Length: 281
Image 1 (cartoon, rainbow, N blue to C red):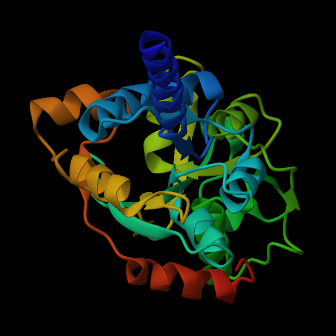
Image 2 (tube, rainbow, N blue to C red):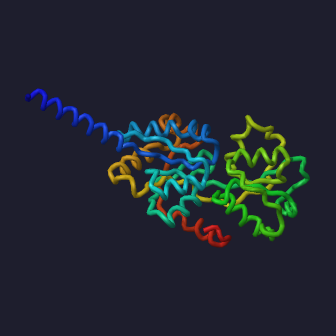
Image 3 (cartoon, rainbow, N blue to C red):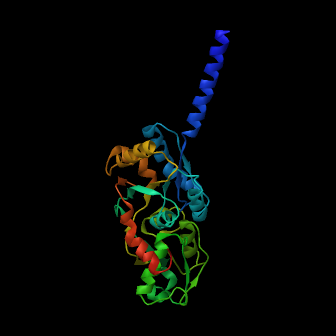
């Protein structure tokens, strides 16, 4: 009888342990600026690294588009997120998310900028030549959409009157492809994303017309759903990944990042002000 009782106790202990293990899964949502296949290739090493460092399963989640990403965060389906700075500030308006690490890139460090691109045979030499032309952007929640508008405004151009703005491309590579295939006269992408297209288009046919102002890079943020103990471990694990170290290259090389640095919400105040100026926030 005692053996039977002990067997029941052990069974329920195992089941309880399985339940705890299942609930311990941490969902890491990454904003899909590229295809799901590319995003998984870029960030799966980071998810694996965090799983080992934190001692809990970290699962990579790549929603279908920017809107789906924001909805998943707001619905509590993501524990930690990695998104561009404008999407972060949009989410912050509705959810008490907390940024605790900012990505570092090889060229620009903790900042990035956008570029206006056109074909070399387009006859377009500057953004002032874009009046009356077809423009394409990734998404309304793309930072370079915002900084691109600001640059056009500084040049005396009006987004609502001076261009034919094509439907949002939703993915960065779609912007470059549209310009290369002459479906658009010019497009705006992140500076570092152009090199990633070298195997898809002949970059010798593409030129840079102008550069936007720099913006703070993508933050990693936690949502209220994640416990403080797990959050502390994740933050420590991210900040261990410093530029020019072997471990960082192994974990972040595919994502074209070199490490992470501390960040706070106030670091994004200047972006908020710019967004309000153009009615994007």
